Length: 168
Image (cartoon, rainbow, N blue to C red; front, side, top):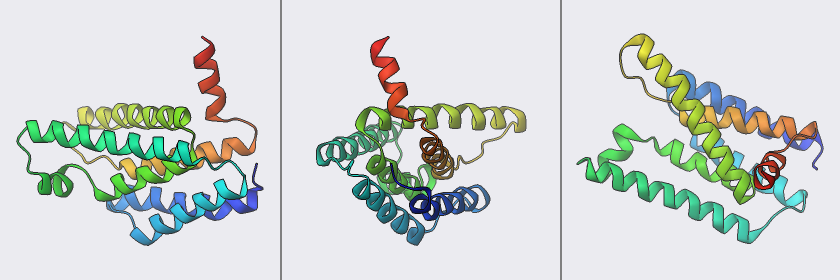
């Protein structure tokens, strides 16, 4: 496990992305690049880097993007317009950061938790306001990634939840 002082810059960047996406519905490309490099550094320093796990996680991200593209294509949305009006490119790029950080099972669980919470929270907001609002998915994922990195410092890991699920 990496010391907290290695994780502090990453936690700060995640907090900045969270606030930035909530307020502006956009995130900084420079922050994404720094965050990606920082997460790679954390994994490398912790000797938990797995090339096979990275390939599987990136393939999972690409598979999600293919299914989303297919879904919107069936609905008649132009591919170019897809990333302008429906899915933020920052949301897509951010997916590769937790894909680098987690093992495959933990990454799938992380995505599931983020998607379900985003649907519940912003679905509720849309019901209350009775209008469509954009979902700051990258910001919410940044918040959850910061939360899980912080919880790992205290001994809690998504890997434990995955093990509990496998044993049940």
